[in-house]
Amino acid sequence: MHYPIFNAIVDSVQNQLDKRDINTQEFKKWQDNKIHAVGLELITGLDQASDYMDALSINFDWDSFRETSLAQNLSGMESHPFLTVETLTQSSINPTIDVEMSWLFNVEKCQPEVNEENGNYRIEKASRWMESISKKVNTLLAEDDIITRWHIEIDGDLNGRYLSAINLISYFQYQLSAPKNLSEVQTLVTKKMQDLLLKANKVISISNETLAESIAA
Image (tube, rainbow, N blue to C red; front, side):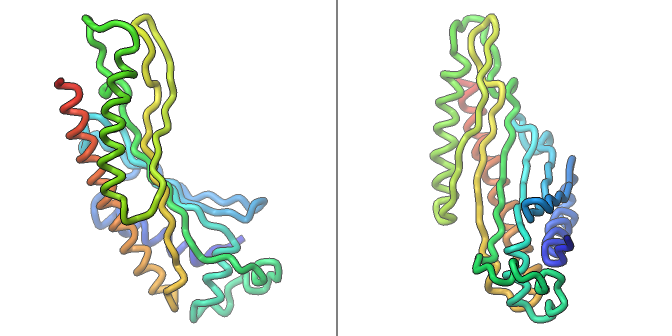
């Protein structure tokens, strides 16, 4: 299956990364025809931006129904291959793109071992700075009406329990129904990508400041 609109979206994302000299560890477009889905996964390292984070991951999810819905409203898309597929053209789905942005924390730097501490002190301390970060990030993203949550995994060693994975995840959804042509789609995606990167940097700054204070305490 061919997705010319989503391909243009991917190009816009790539252009924004290039303009900001953001190198990616991974930039992979995927497609699953069985479920009519397509997406983009990108990961960029944060070793230069944070002492406490390893990477930023941004995933874009799209499908043939949204591709078709948007193609029906864009001038210049009359020859889009999906417009000849009745099951797609009869769908009433809104053309929205789902974006999942994840900040991947370095579990060792965020949970340093302290010789004089015993028990599950690493998890207890982590729960406090995670709660602090959550409150600040929720305030930052309040106008976006999105979901933000932590994904954690717990393990243990001779010094007690600790978090073996710490990821902060925000879920965004953007309406793409306003554009009238493909160029306007790319302009809108460019603006949204700029906004995403700005918010990503603010979350990094919030986390850096909060963790520096927590570890120094």
